[in-house]
Length: 133
Image (cartoon, rainbow, N blue to C red; front, side):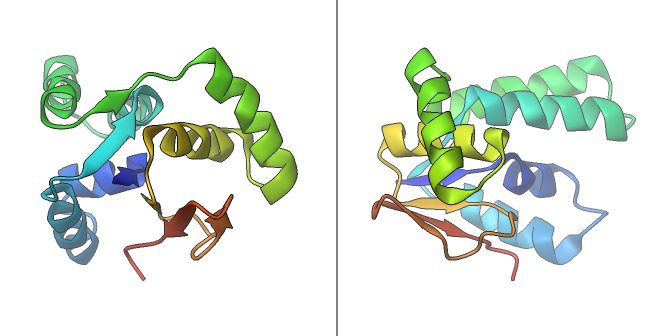
């Protein structure tokens, strides 16, 4: 199972800004073992609201499509608490730690993210990969 961070989804939507990253994101999201979290969907909606001229309806349709296409894990209390432990152990931001916590709970072995922690292995179970390098 592979977990995607919001930047992968955003590159799949915003083709004109980064064509090479767009193609990579589309390829990744066509995989049949992709999962994400409600945090990822929320971040995508937030960025699209702030940085594009897409209408609220268009953004809602993108969010709805994500829920239809992929298993989307809800962030739970245990994930929030685990994020603090991950943050302490791996020196990640709280928000990145929360993504990791949900990815671990989902059973993902790879977390695709443009984050600067490419190659970092979390708890011997999850590897962060930057698919755009």
